[in-house]
Length: 148
Length: 148
DNA sequence: TATTGTTATACTCTATAACTATA
DNA sequence: TATAGTTATAGAGTATAACAATA
Image (cartoon, rainbow over all chains, first blue to last red; front, side, top):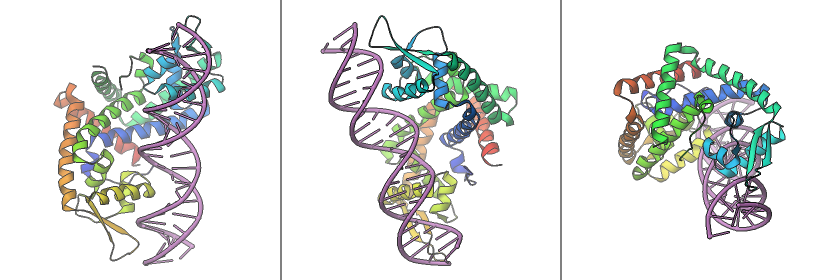
């Protein structure tokens, strides 16, 4: 993106710092996830479905923080790649239960390694202690505000 | 947004934490900036123009990290509100030199107080020391990666 | 009547390409 | 010819409203 040097007033804003770091991290993810064939957003869905309990599309949308209409296209893409399977819930036929396919589990494992590498490159300037601090502070903000 | 509880796998991802916190902060800004009549994005432009050196539209776009075509609409809006004035550069008539109007300076001062309050509410769970740590860590990441 | 998934539509944000006026 | 600003256009991303199937 090659942003030019900026005044101290703007770079002191927390919004600006968060956005800059997030954009960098998303760029790194795009780069490292490309060979795996999934986007960062899709990795989120795969992570969500990698568990023991059945998940409907609407549950997945709620947990991911997107609209249920957005989830339709997301699942369409993953199904077309053969990574996720829809099947009608036996107890409530309105629901689609989502599940990872074998290829989905493989893609998830590879995508997680790619994401780890992207995070590692972002945090290259911080030592392990500082990286852990950053995660802890962000996690506290994320939890305490969005989940009253 | 009322995001449901989510698995530890996804909430451990740095991208997810950063986005959650950024969305919260943007929501707080939207709320507190509404009475001032400027958006968070517009506050960024006002901050950029609040300095001694003349700034062209393209310079402002570069420093803000947006395309110059995006900057046109942004300046259009601020000009319509009477907060920013365009004038042709005397030395290079192709350039628009941007400057804050008196109303622009007033709006900037009020918007800054609103932004401070939004940040304060976001960081309410952290003490001063932790807030400063968070800023420092984010600033180091923002600098070291985007400005090689 | 309410809910899940779906489609159609619109709105926002952003970038690419082409135009103009200056250089 | 190259550059600053502008316009038109298109591409993501997302949300609202309406519809079908099911509860």
